[in-house]
Image 1 (cartoon, protein in one colour):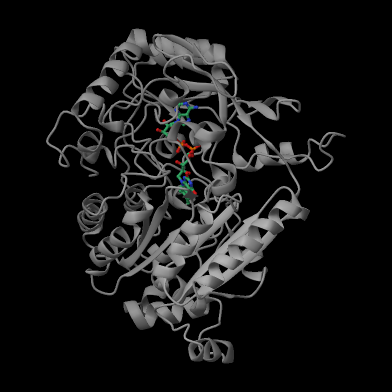
Image 2 (cartoon, helix red, strand yellow):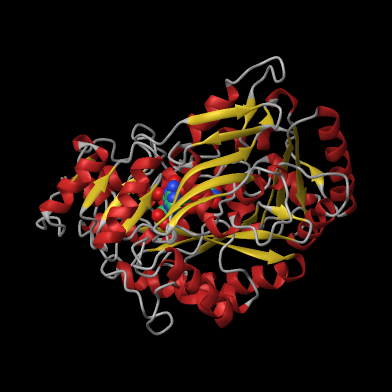
Length: 568
Ligand SMILES: Cc1cc2nc3c(=O)[nH]c(=O)nc-3n(C[C@H](O)[C@H](O)[C@H](O)COP(=O)(O)OP(=O)(O)OC[C@H]3O[C@@H](n4cnc5c(N)ncnc54)[C@H](O)[C@@H]3O)c2cc1C
């Protein structure tokens, strides 16, 4: 039973994902599965493990002198500076697994000294200038959904929270099909605004096209600076495909790029901002592409394959078919498919028996789901072509549009399960890598073997962001926690998985960024010259290293590789 009641100012209220009133309990079928396969007991349910129910209380005062705090109040206004224990804790971490462990242990360190809420770009310029002069660390703060230790204030300082005031849509340009927006707007507010922007040019309004699983609690600014990818990215593109122009405040001055769709004006500085993860400056405005919103035109498909190999080949052929792309497009490996059959109640039914007789066997079969948005005729054409390719590779249509419609409906729900599982001492986390088509089979098998080498572990894998030349692989790993050794045990396991991704040819990150978590691998991934270039840019734009310092992107990383950071 979910812990539904906890104090507003408790650690639990910070570690709980998303809408405070939304709880997602593991379905009975999943509980049965966990009991059978992972040794979860009734006792685990009766005694939630380190639930973090105490009120946040710190014994450390802010390290910044009162004179600095007063100066900040002078810049942004008295009410826009907060030094309360609760806000300092809340602004000192994101949703990385280790962040949640710290909250459960009720030991959060390091801490920001003060939270500042700028009202506009002028405030941001003034705060950046002040911090630069006083050499105070400054960490831009969006939705707090970082899963790479991106918000950890290694050097204390100021958390610059952009969500309170800098959260407005500034302009929709229907002729150019673009929107200009402030960085602190969160997903639903942004999408609702566009959906409701109904005019004769687009009676159904517009859509932003970017829907990460963290959509409900992440910001446009965070999406841009971490190079995020949403669930419909195969059709609409990754966030870096959507950004037209931006405004970026650095300690060295303001960078403004123009909104042209393409240009040949030297290196594209937008790409320096996209991926900068708070280390070079603060994104204060961004202009992005938008699309006509026509959900009534959505076309859906879902297929079941006999095995993973044919499923991957079909996905590749669909992406390379030259007839356009689905918007949502994903395939699940045999383990993910098997667990979906269990949790959706299909296992051991007459349908399941019939499928097995036809050769779609549990432990081998794989699901492919897709949808196409926009023009209906184009949608039907893509579906027809995709179906022909899938059929050629032995697939059958499976539950028509039901499975994909269910995906749309529940697409933001799974993260709510994490605290429920951690309550019963089940560790669950994800790693996502980019991969070329030719490497997918080897990478999938190699990483999976490492994840599964840990006893009683689950490793569900899917590809859900696809390109002509490759796709992502998203590894969800679930295992029993070691309750007395939560940090070291997790770090060892996690490190072994990242090493395996590197060994089998995967990219270091597909949409989550680098943060502090992947930084120890980053230098080798980039190469010495590239890393020196990035460090030179950092040294120019942020000479006093005030912007999100302490290891993000490995820019001020000087220690021995992989040992320089400690989560403890
Ligand atoms: C449950 C869950 C599901 C997720 N699913 C996805 C997914 O499907 N796709 C995906 O891409 N990611 C996903 N993520 C990761 C995360 O949501 C993204 O990295 C997101 O883009 C971060 O946005 P945010 O507003 O929460 O940023 P924050 O977490 O607040 O900040 C992230 C980083 O960006 C910097 N930053 C934030 N705003 C600015 C700004 N205006 N200027 C300069 N720097 C800034 C911060 O300093 C920090 O380094 C998921 C995370 C969770 C917890």
